[in-house]
Structure formats: structure tokens, C-alpha cells
Length: 542
Image (cartoon, rainbow, N blue to C red; front, top):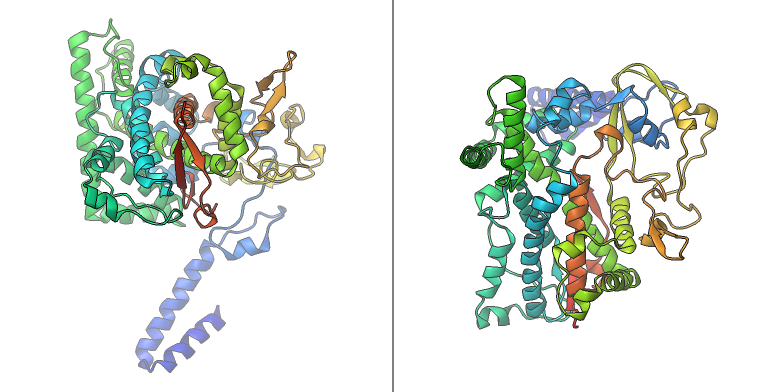
């Protein structure tokens, strides 16, 4: 540290600063460096570590094959303070709570949103209608692009945003991200279309329609959570965000929007009553009905406009948007770069929806949601496997993991993109595993194959009739976590992915794009996000 300070003083002398000013600046540098040193991760005694990781405030993470045991069997690990810090902007959401009675009570508002009856009756129809809007947009872009690639990431984000808003606020929700974009492209003049022409491998850039404020706040909320996740000091970052006038304006807009949606649902309920649930056409409607019933059972007044209600609604949108959208973006890249897999998926869709194929129409929602297609299931889980994010848990007491002492309060990262998942597993002596882990069989991937390769077939097994069967336990998968603290939106995510993939692959062939437009560089935030996703479309003719 002293040598660092000395170097700083030498530098200051070269720029002819006064001694007093030089001393102040050098002193400041020493203090900042000392603060930086305090932020560096400290190894836990007795646990092997990467020396390079101690030189970065972002550290390194051990790779545990014990993840399933920690998430499902052990009571000495729970929701981490790391997660609570990241999710501080939604302070009253159940995701931040330790497992217990408060957490169970908070979940009662949303616990029935993922049951098949609600998904099929309310969520899926709303999502299907928004994906049809997306298909229309890509039909326009396919025609205008004339075989040129275009940036597709925003289209996927907006489609899933429209879908989660339709799920949350109803299919008749008055704001949309995709339809205004289609309207804009349909309004282009011949001169504007001519100005967009270019060489076949040059990406075409389409004009973009702006988002309504009520949609923009949802994306902004996701951006803030991403900033916290990538910050070495989440609390300080959140404090700074809260000080910014633009963020305060966003928060005020979010509150007005969410409270307005709650008010609409409350008025609907008062019109129809609680005995008849036919008026329930959105997640917010359902939550208002649940709160009414829970309040009656507890002998209290309903808390429709509480912070808990507001935060649960906001995270329905943010949480349901980021992860699914990014998985689909990765998925489209995988299918583009693996034409054999893309062709097999399309053939599987055609075989499963033979009537729709014969009638030269899209599969209906009922056909999509009630037809089992093993290769489609395998495709979705392979996309999830290759785009999953790590999970954190915190030791609630002094404990052991793989024979090493883990002090109370230690945050453990359970990597879903390391050994056992995307690379060969470590050789761990059974004696070092917990008793519950030793008693549990965990199936591993074929580690002789390239575990990072996109290969949906790894999820398929042959049934007694010789037909392919999807095997959800073919190998380790942590995309949604495990156990009672696993992601509650799992079924909704699969519903969105199933509809988007079926309709997209039915309508379009994803053609190769130039290597410069097909990179796999990524950044991590709320999700593992590709830095680019370019698509070249060709309509499938029937």
C-alpha cells in the first residue's frame, strides 16, 4: 500500500502540483486504496480458494455438487442477505424474506397464480394474443428486410413484456410495446423504405416506436435491480438511485400506475362480489380476490393498497419478464446456429399439430397447451440449462459443506454454469458429503460430450414403444432453483416459452447470420444476457 502511495506522489510531482494539494490528493488515494482493500473477499480458513479471486472485489465462487441437497434437504441454509440487498427496491416482496410464517403469509396472495386452471383460463389466452402481435411484427420485418439480418433482442423483450402485462393486468390492458412498432412500420413511406435498403449481410435498422410511461417504468425497475446486482455496494448504489430526480419520478409513476390497476380490480370485485370469480381475468384481479377472502377469515379489513400488494404486483412483471425474455433470446441464437436442431423441432411441431398443418393455419392455443411434444420440452430445458444464473443461499448457523466449516452468515453461490452443469464435475469423496446428500442419487450428464454444446437430445430417452420421451431428470438443472424457495413462476415461464417457440418456428425459418453478428458474449444482471442477437428470417410456406 505504501508503494502505491509513493507512486502516486511521484506522479503528482511530475504534474507540478503544490505540496499541500499533492499531500491531500495522495492521502485521498491512500484512503481509497484502503477502502478497496477492505472490499476484497477474505478466504474462509480451511477452504481452498483461487488466489486471483482475492485481488478482485468480485471474488470467485466455489463449485458445489451439493446444490440439490442445500436447496431441498438442508435447513441450515436459507434466503441470502445478498438477495435481500439486491431486491431492496421491492422491500415487501416475499422473495426477500427468510423462510417462515411471514414468508408463508406473504405468498398467500399469489400462491394460486400458477395452478393449471388459472394458467389455462386466464394467463395463456392473454399470452397467446400478444405472441400473435409479435408474429405480425416479424412478418412486416421479414418483408421489409428482404433477407437481411436485424437486431431482434428488443422485439423479444417487448413481446414478453406485453405477455406478462397481459397476465398481470388482463388481456384488455390498454398499453402495448409491440403493436405500436408494427403500426410504425406499416406507416413507412416508399421513400423511407428505399432509404433502408443495403447489402444482404448488412443489418437493417428499423425505426423504433417509443414506450408508454407505464411500460417504461417496468423496464426501469429491472434496470435498477440489474445495477444493484452488478454493484460491489448494493446499498450505496440504491441510496444513490433514490437521490436521483429521474428515479424519483419513475417511482412516482410506478406507484400511480400500480395503484390505478389495483383500483380497477377492486371496483370490478365490488360490482361482481366474491362469490362469483368470473370477473377474475388477471393476476391482479386474483390477488384482490385472495386478499378479500384472507381478510374475511382473519377478521380484518382488506389491505388492497398495501406496500406488500404493490411489490408483489411489480415483481410479477419484472421477474416474469427478464428471465424468460433472455432465455428466449439465447434460444433463438441456438436455433439459428444449429439448423439441424431447428429443423427437427419444426418437424416435431408439424407432426404433433398435423391438423393445423393440413389446414395451413397456426396451432390454436388449446392445441399448444394440451399437446405433449418431447422435443419441444427438451428444447426449452436445453435453452434454460445454457442460460441459467447462479443461486445464492446463506448459512443460518455454523455448519459444514463438503467437509469444510461454513460460518453462520456466509453466502454460498450454487453455480448453475460451472462443473456438473457445463463442465465435468469435481471428484468429491462420498465421506465429505452430508448424510442427506449421500442418500440422494443425482444423475449426471455424459461428461465425455461437450457439456457446453446446444444439444436438446440429451433430455430424451427411449420409451418401451421406441418413441422419444422427455426426461426432466436427465441431468442437473438449476434454472428455477429447487425446493420450497424455488422460482414460483416456473409454470408461467414454460407457458410463455411454449407458445412463443411453437408459433415462431411454425411461421419462420431462422437463417444463418454473418459470424460478426453471431457472438456469444454476455453480461449478467437479473439474467444471463447476450450482448447481441441478430435474426435473418424466411417465411415458412405451406
